[in-house]
Image (cartoon, rainbow, N blue to C red):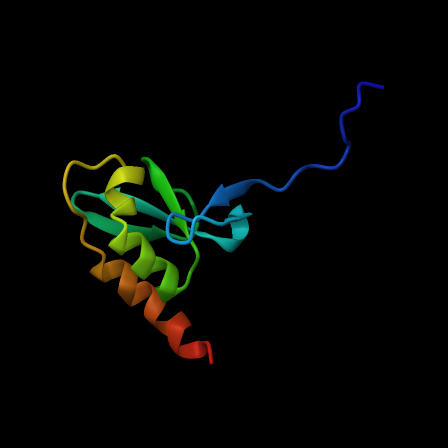
Length: 95
């Protein structure tokens, strides 16, 4: 045997907000469309993506660290209002 495992490994990504590794399915993919951060829950939008936990805390940390322009290789600051609107229902549901 070659020593390889037979079980498929779950792909992991790093949250740009808290910098913790998590399963790709637990994170929300973010894509830059023009000068705006857009959530990509299905993971099908074209372009470079960044991953963040679907929590306002991680979003705030990513904005404070200026992680989105760096991760998405954008020249200027990116607008996150649409992203905040997408995370708002999840923040209200969490006690």
